[in-house]
Image (cartoon, rainbow, N blue to C red; front, side):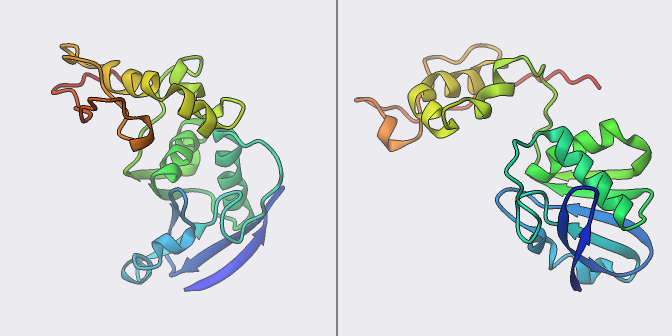
Length: 196
């Protein structure tokens, strides 16, 4: 396995590479790096050309001081593929990498031959919805969450439940527990509608 760097259209990206054959790009989760995939590479390198970049701001990849978006991170992967002359690849993604991979597959379907996402929540809700902005709030998301944790927890765990939960969910964080704290319970049945 080689640890390399490549200059893309606007970033110097670090990545791991091993093997030859059909290209497969592995996208790491948060807060990880390409190192996450080190144990999978030896098992697959005999049949595939494996690439695992550190995404923007992680590991050995540049950390420009700009506000990032899913579109920018997906474009980074297209630029990475272009820099390595990879026209089309299978993409395997974990956690946060899956959000990038999902955007990549939607905006550049001709560049993705197959897609495998592990432990990833797809972002299919309307961008104008409350969930789309929870972690972009200013000041810092942590401050916003600390002030509004009960509403956030309630919206996550009751928004799609049928029938509604009996009682109000509570924050699992000790600092936010009221007197008479009751552990958070999950809905017994969730309904999710997805359209692509």
